[in-house]
Image 1 (cartoon, helix red, strand yellow):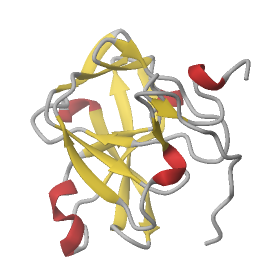
Image 2: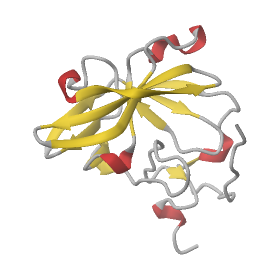
Image 3: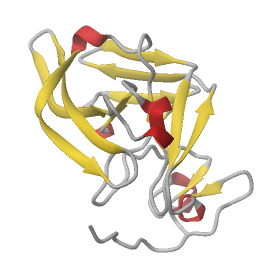
Length: 165
């Protein structure tokens, strides 16, 4: 799979650059408060998220089992392959009558190097009502990949700190 390039953006003070991430994904423990809302209900709430950093993409937050409402995540039929982490299973998010198709993904059996991600849930921001990190509403990135989370401390071409430059 060919990676798309994005324009280079210099980070502001106290920002990290999405372009400076390692070529293979790096997983970091994150103790910031991560909250996901769908259909007016909190479907994920954690201070134990895992943050995955990959070159040219904003960070992706993974919510560990026990910190998302498992009953709201229905397995979907499709799977996707990541050259680094293995096979990811897609999930629909269901709350009452509202359904977001293929709105989340998880690695039921990731490769050994990424075992810490097993059964953690990642979400496509455009499929849910809102995601927050420490109370800041996360912005959906433009472009091909909508799983990355843009906050004010991430330098990315469409991040709030970059607009108007």
